Length: 142
Image (cartoon, rainbow, N blue to C red):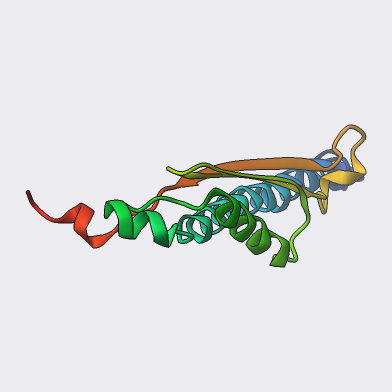
């Protein structure tokens, strides 16, 4: 007795599982892009805040012995560093006072695979960082 051949059973699996494979691949690729964008925004904000925190007011340091920021130079240094990055920075904010520098960076990323699905447009990742001037004397035991 011979069995009848299976006709079309594999086709049904291909039709059902192919979209799922593409969806999972899209989540993997575009999820990786999102994680990378978040880390990149954090790195950019931290570097810019540190660049701003290096702008110490020399006259105030000589007078008081304490590191005090020059707010105008600190803000300019932080924003200048952000301007040098070639990433898609959609928004940034640099603020400084005499004690610290605060930087916010926003990156926009276009999805590679999930963009074919309606409703999956670009996504925005935001990160904030702050830095304050520290001298070696601040770390000395008292």
